[in-house]
Image (cartoon, rainbow, N blue to C red; front, side, top):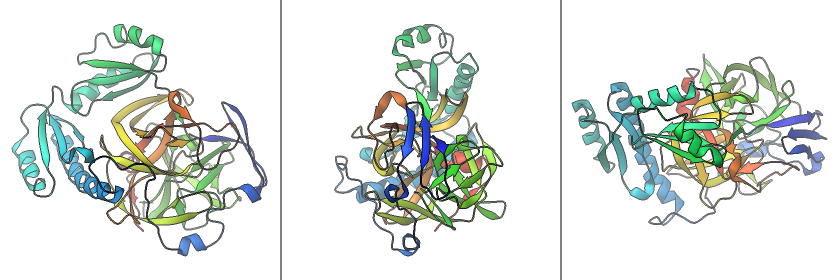
Length: 425
């Protein structure tokens, strides 16, 4: 989610943020988070990112889980690229480490090239090929037909990873039956209508060049406060990836102390992604508690699949882990900005505490690597589901809103929108 800036002062004496719940006032600079105030965090050693919550059953540690997930996702990325290239038949992938196997769903008989690829990948990762009633392409065509209709109460539409149909959500539980009878009545594939999903956009503090992901940035023109995502290379130079709703092309991005980061050079609202023309570096900020930040190098990018476990790092909430992907390839209608964003990922905090919140938009979604002092880029925070609002974590100005179900733009979607590539640290 973004936060709206009510008042900006270059010395960060007062930062006012207006949100739907009312006016948010940030206290004087002595109480503002100290992330990046000195050079030490840039030079200091990386630390392990270790979620505080219980480790899923079957794993002795989060590091063990991430090790399994890393191998599964590397295989899944190859299958997904090949499957979508073949187009006919590919339905989806579930990469939940708890399953101890990669589940690939296919409509019909996969071509020999896919069979050969699966045989190669099975040498390293257990893979089960499962039948799907519909292909991803067929389901996405049906989803587009729903999106072209008057929006009404529909807030999202997504193809199921197992190819069994579409999942359509509505914000008002009372409208679910009516939607099922009218909006999706003549769709040629099965549709599961679920109530209670209301997407809303989401928006560390005094970083310096080369800029890192997970830091705070302000857009004085649009009156917003957001977070930086990941350093990317685009057209021969480094830039900073962040959320598209945080500004428009040409807007100036500054840190809360007023130092110029750069101007927005590319913007794609349909993907909710944009690039800031900034000298950036392949690191992201993380922290165990406010004021205890460090940096972790980015070693690459991995796609997102149902069942994956991820962490978020936003300027306001700080590092939040124990978040599991529940849907991929979702089209979400953000009523507060008035347009569809697709494809996005929906993920939930397992313990139902905050996953992200206002001010975190554009922030890093990451996966710790086998060496948990290093991370993979997974995406950038887009927003949250306001039917799952809970108390915020990290930096909490009055009126700030956070959610345990969050929405993010997959890193593959965000970078391909501009032909950009992740910068590694």
